[in-house]
Image 1 (cartoon, rainbow, N blue to C red):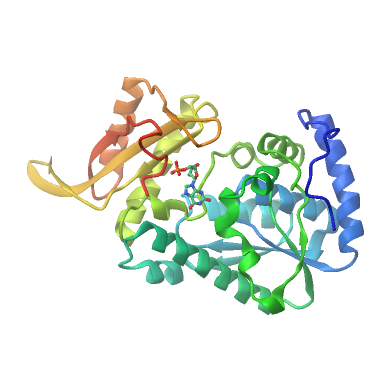
Image 2 (cartoon, rainbow, N blue to C red):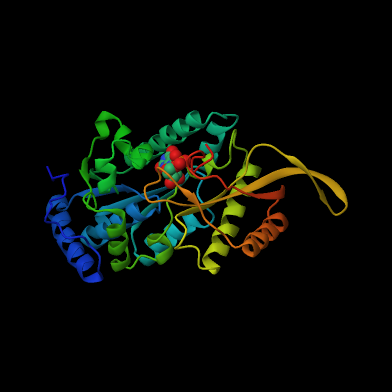
Length: 326
Ligand code: XMP
């Protein structure tokens, strides 16, 4: 059994040279562990699972099968990028599962935040299990577990932990980045040639846009979340804030207010912008965004996003407000 304790002597991976040395060592270890057997990986497109995929592609190539489940709650362009990077550029075996209708049908009418999370988590395991059963001879399951997931009891990754697979599908685990901290995973990702917007991506919760479309999710309001989030990300990237602000996104609450469009009264949703800085996500401060940029983003959102007539900026630090709205 590989150790889950980081040795005190282990050097922090801070440079491309150290990352390359780590990659070479992991390739040897992965080949020794896996031999000529097959490995399965749930590839979300987040930095951890992407780095694990890239390492395994280098080590065992087509013995790896990546499964990317689109649950309909991903950000704009994410499934397309996963396919482009892993299938087209890295030539990986990638199974893309369009499970959008399945998830959204299960979530219809469900407004309790924890119930929504449970449905998303349980459905994810079910979809992944179905895909695993279609594949023959898989002996290993790769996971993007990182060191904070091991040392923090309520690891953020607990939600999409595939440990919930049934008994007869218990695979041997492959966790090549389990002793690394997030900043080290990013240095390794860069050395593996992954694109910057994948490597330096902000944290994104397992239930995705589902917790930003508050209350019962509807397809039209979910699109308003996705489109406004894409505008915010584009403007933050253009204005040098993307690498500077820890987490930034939009929320579309499930209530409406009166507005006026083309001389007529409208009854539409507000979009809330949230942009926070934090070290450990336990407390957070609000980013001081230039007023002119907020005005520009507002202008784009009210003109480009269907069903929206107002934009608000959430000024609340944590505490008292959590980072997500539900
Ligand atoms: P809160 O909202 O509790 O968020 O201040 C702290 C950090 O955790 C993320 N978060 C989640 N991540 N599954 C996840 O994988 C979840 O259910 C979940 N809820 C919150 C949130 O985005 C923030 O980075």
